[in-house]
Amino acid sequence: AAGGSTCLIVFGFFAWRTTLLIGQELNGDPRPSAFFDDSPFKSPVPAGSSSAARMYPPIKSFPEIARNAFGSVGCLILSVILYFELFSCICIFFVTMGDHLHQLFPDIPIVIFMILVATVSVAPAILLRTPTLLSYLSMVGTVATVCVCLSVALSALVEGDMTAVLASKKGIEDTLPHHILLNTSGISLS
Image 1 (tube, rainbow, N blue to C red):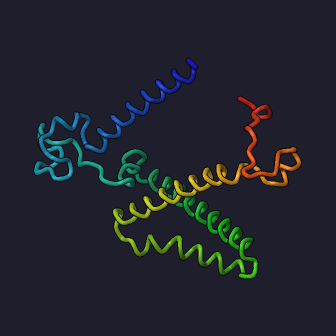
Image 2: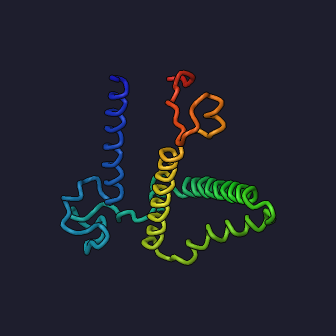
Image 3: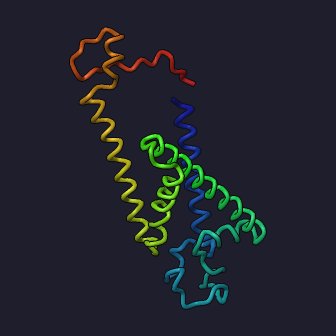
């Protein structure tokens, strides 16, 4: 228990310190933002012009963070790696969804499912132009995830957490719901 608490405190310290450093970089000055009277993005004083001004213009986007951290070449390499990773993830998602939908509806060709999944996945990003509208879509995904988790839990409570065939093999009576206590003896604790 002490090791876990120590790790939590150490990681918490590093996260706190990292947020301070990132905040200073985003602010454009190592001095705290309370030192300045204005917003970093609407400052009437040009950056570096006086001691009351910020040293650098504030950073506004993720590419600017990468450019300041790794330089132009590093930013390009990082962008290529991240975009390749995103492309790989979306390809895996398309193939997985198309394959699972094909198993549910085997009469429809798998290519049609791939096209449908791609269209449904890309359409919101094309139709919803602003990040605010896309955040609402993210909220819908969160609500859908909560609904799926609740439906699985409710199904386990109402219908049981094992099938009737398995219940008859274990000698449990035929009345619904069939429940069995979780047996953790085969699970390693490492």
